[in-house]
Length: 63
Image (cartoon, rainbow, N blue to C red):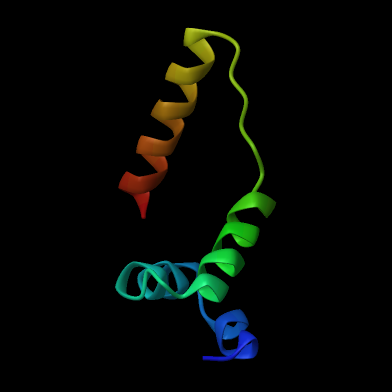
């Protein structure tokens, strides 16, 4: 595949491509670049972790 084909894929499609073709270094690097660009969530207390988990669980239930 070409770089432009990878760029057109969703994150899920690209992840599946990397799973099925683990030796495809180009796809792997593109996926890692995308994951690195995602916003980071940093927690400093157990309460913050618990609140974030509850928020994500509620979001997944509402979808």
